[in-house]
Amino acid sequence: MRSVVLGMCALLPIMAADSGMADHDKRIRESATVLNEIMNAGDKAIPQDLLEKAQCVTIVPNLKRAGFILGGKYGKGVITCRTSNHTGWTAPSTVRIEGGSIGLQIGAGETDVVLVVMNQSGMNRLMKDKFTIGGDASVMAGPVGRSAQAQTDAAMKAEILAYSRSHGVFGGISLEGATLRPDNEDNEKIYGSPVTQEAILHGNVKPTPAATPLFNELNRWAPYKQ
Image (cartoon, rainbow, N blue to C red; front, side, top):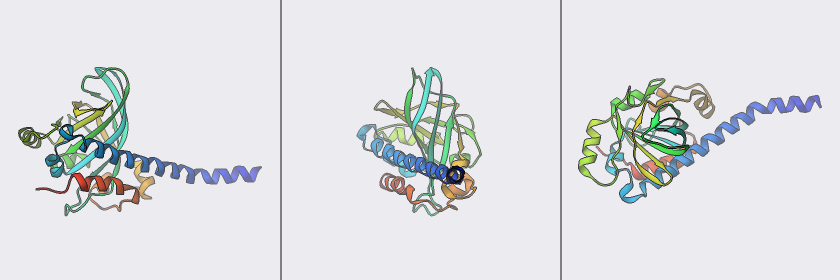
């Protein structure tokens, strides 16, 4: 009996690591699915011209939200940036989004959130241990559809464009007061050693095979465009 207990104890770290990887793989798949479904929404999609100019993309599937007007939220997602030569995407970093409220909301539920980082300034914000959306970084509700004027205004005025999808309804959102920070524990499990978000997003970390579905969607919808 004692040997069985000792054996189970020895397996616990391995099981925990497998669970972490499984969660990460699932998060990647869900993020890829969210992007695919949003970009296939026709006139309600993120304008592809904007996505082609993006420096980084953050996707948080199934963000938990609750409250009336002033609510709370919590979720995990992934962020990836263009490589330095703009031919691909960096390994995804796991991020947490917490606090604040999402526009006018009633009740509880889950929301998919997409943050499109439009310039180098917005990308530099992501290198911090923690930053407040709408406080440390300028953010606006992203335009949808094919309005060239809206796309131009958005690209010029905001570091980050915010989108959400809830109960099948998709559009730009007000995302003020939420904090975004790297999940260093998850990233350590995924990449096998302590690693900073800055190192990941600068392309200094090799992506795992689990990132392939997300890369496929990003390369499909966001080929680099000056």
